[in-house]
Length: 501
Figure 1: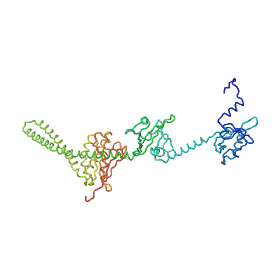
Figure 2 (figure 1 turned 30 degrees about the horizontal axis):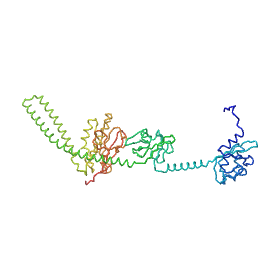
Figure 3 (figure 1 turned 30 degrees about the vertical axis):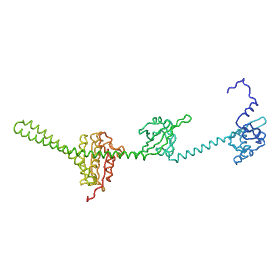
């Protein structure tokens, strides 16, 4: 430290003046007798005694009567300062008025002209202790709130990192207790106004607060939905955010169920309309197809007679006959399709039937092969040797089978040619008639029956969700599972009809 040689020296009187001016309380004790020799004005003011009144007082006169402030303990503390040079203690003085004053006191050995003394410096810490008690109490309240409340509360910094979470919040978001939490987006997706958003987008909307949703996905494919508010909190320049949430999973799942029910109702109405339209088309097409066949039969007879009369060269007659035969074949094929459509949708009113699953399969096979052949998919059928009689809705059960097959064919169009194999099997199994559809596609990525209807641009709309409803409302089971050799298996089982039925 640089000392200016021209500066005047500080005298003993200057030190006395500074000691009198300081707000730190000072008492001077004799090192041997521990009697008070002197006190500065700050000490006199706090204790309420003058220096003259203080000199004859002992520790028991000016200290709390509590056992830990006994005179023996006070003298030992002062002696420790004499022996070691300094000693510190929390001491409770008692003023002239009887007020007990908690202090932080430091005793220091000093060498005076008159001999060794102990200088005690102390300050009132009552206010500090009160603040500390309030902080401990507040901390205990917060700890109890964090551990026992059902409220889901999160504190985050401006970067989106979690700084605090109640125990309920830790459990809901799937965090590990007593471990660093990390970014909120590690645990779920943020939603604002029905769309997913980044943390930065949510932060920008929290001005000062915004409604928010947090979707926490589980490994089993389900999600927990938390909804509440994100509020910006600024204190002394620190930017923090408070997120208060509550679990609305039941409500969100209910909305999803209601939406699915609406889709199903719309589908059923559309399906009935499709049936009516198919019947009308089949009826209207039957007559013109029959007429076209009759016309072609007349052309064939006429060409044969002209060839026999020598009017038409034999080669031209042969070519004409070939073309007519092919046209007749296509008309017959169209008639077969029309008959299949009429058979398929002609009995929608029969919703409680005893049906052979083999018949349902036979009626659908034509449509399955129409879809499979252009896609290069080989269709193999393993029917049960005996009738598999079940009680079901023939048309809708057939639609479920078609849905399984069409989905499998579409799935395998992206696979190599040698993997494009579709296998349909019917069998009996412990009181149930079972039908399965196996493919060799990419396999299952999630529970397919959670999807709501078709996601394909040109799908019929039934979807696996409605297939699930069709089978389960007939007291059956429906499932999907991966195959060990690759691909997936979709199947359903319906209770067998009674023998009398």
